[in-house]
Length: 560
Image (tube, rainbow, N blue to C red; front, side, top):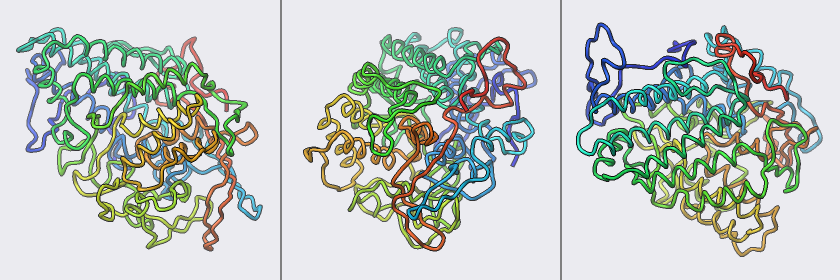
């Protein structure tokens, strides 16, 4: 398969917008002179601008350049996230998926130590070059590509919006488009800042920039744009015109289930959830080997403070509520931004484990409690996939689930069945509320939020609130629930990082008490794993080589 664009992706935009509709694909832009296309000449109407704003997100951001494995941002970049969290495994050579999630060493129950002769950090860096990108082997390229393409598409829309004549309440319609762009720019900066050691702040569609800033600055810029989105939404005066524009920006086929046209207040709550996420995912809150007071000696970020936890608590208290619409994705038979069979992490994991691209890890399954209906409804042990160091697994995802009513479905390859959560969700917000309360000493309140999520997803397990759990016991429930509730949503690696698990054991990290099955069928229940992964990726060579830094921060993580 051929990559859409190998370099210079920060400053390009797809000028052909696609209508992501349920009936047909038709041209939405006023094409002007098709032999001499420019943004200003071709995007000069309300319809054209809305089409460009939609395509800039769903095509430039989520479909652009990901045909190396699966076909969207949610199959490959999110796939790496789940692999490095060890909730999934892989054995294919494509795009380094078989190497990126392999730990430095493991110690089995009998004391046998198995060592990885090609550690993940060395693999990532040896393939971070432009030739490897062209061959589809530079794993750290894709997330950067997608998010800066989305960011620049939004910059283009923002440069045009004030010059377009809107019908009806023109100010409301313009502000709806602006809020859309601010929201997705905040999303893009959060994605880059949460994964890469440094990056670029680019807010002008016509400008270039080689001043790299630390990931913390990117998160600040994300917060700035999310806050701008909320402020802009506060100026909406015509709910009718607001709903009309947003209803066109959000693809019609995603406006089902938890997806829909958000009210202004719903969108503001979605923003609060994302602001809380930005704090939580980019600070350390170590919980290593059952120790709530664990510390990490060497990392690229700092530890959560009481003030940070209180900020998260305030935001998620006003975050996504049960019943709120959120930003979701669905597959369609054609004109999709991801396909049913290969567009998401879960679709590449769904099916018989001996044949799927990704495999459900035993370390994922071990987080389900006894009698959890989510396990019974979604997973089967009909086949065992055998692999030595990258781990054997007895589990497969059942396509479409096993038909238990009211129980969450983890994966389906049927068109339109699987609901992808692109940004925040009720479950994520409630679990952030739980963790903040637990860390602030409100253990029972935190446990009640965990119970609420399990009830919402149909787990059918006994409540943990009222069982007098200690801080360590409560955090154990919290970490287990985040791993099983939020898999496939691009969050798992960030959790493993902030809990300290991905760091070298020599620096206080590591993961303990893990289930590992050998090819001989021996089930180990107390395995120590030393992942020793990069906590924040280096800047991709396609950027750092073509756009070298001049007098700015490092583009290679100096802590590893």
